[in-house]
Length: 254
Image (tube, rainbow, N blue to C red):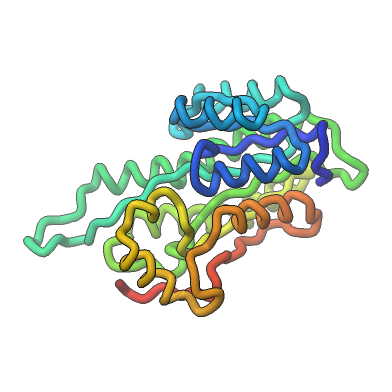
């Protein structure tokens, strides 16, 4: 997929962290970018700074997602969607006092991370399928975000790991589903990245996380995630694949 001034890219969770870096990357590449996020203040400010477009979006609400996709399509042919929206949670299946994991919390993590991913994917694919294919028959590219927790879930990550494993699990069948209309689907599974969530940790805790990464022995940069998302968009032979982006990290039990 060529990235140029006619390419429309939508980034969910685009107001901060991995999503913000992805927005900056695609704007820098010349694309028309729609920032989809539920944080109106940050999202609008980023869009204003970069000359992008902002759409207030809740990925768990189909009407909200469709509205964002419509806004993206108003900019031109929607060709790339990078889905970064998600939430984290830590809770053991049984707490130390013997109480069970809150089922409502488990459902919410699944709703945002897994159902939200598929909800964006299905509506984006429907919009892309209406577009004209390029010379290779390609109509669009969808990049989802999982986590190394999908493979190496730690103690307390039952909900989060399950949600991200679901994203990994849908990648190949959905890529096969959408092959008929020329839409590629890939997933990035990031390791430990220097995002706003980790920025709140004290420096000793951040250093300890970095020390567990084989090489390079540091936290990942959101710009590195964004670079991979752009490469996936450009590389027409990447399809149906989940790519770990983690410095060879394999997470220990805790």
